[in-house]
Length: 95
Image (cartoon, rainbow, N blue to C red; front, side):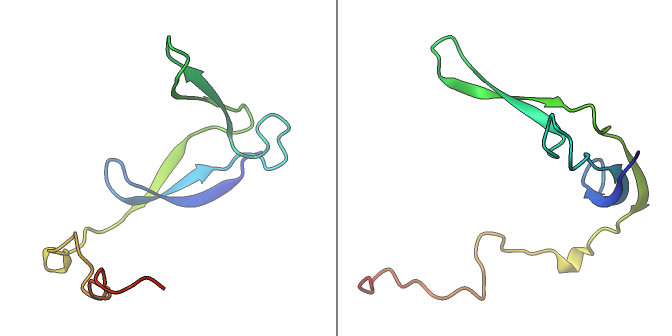
């Protein structure tokens, strides 16, 4: 049985997509949708995680509606600082 949901995708363009959802009562993945396997390098250090999708769902998605681009005049010009953030209080004593 397919359990559908609407989600926002970002590739190749922002769009609304209809996608399948993992089965919440799956005994293999506990509703996560896959099983993570950590692995290490030749020294025994953590090197990453492999993701094995569970058989309780499929990873397909159908694009329903592409979302419009933000107009150029609405782009933020200063991405690094928040104009509404409080000032620099580094010279004040801690609480």
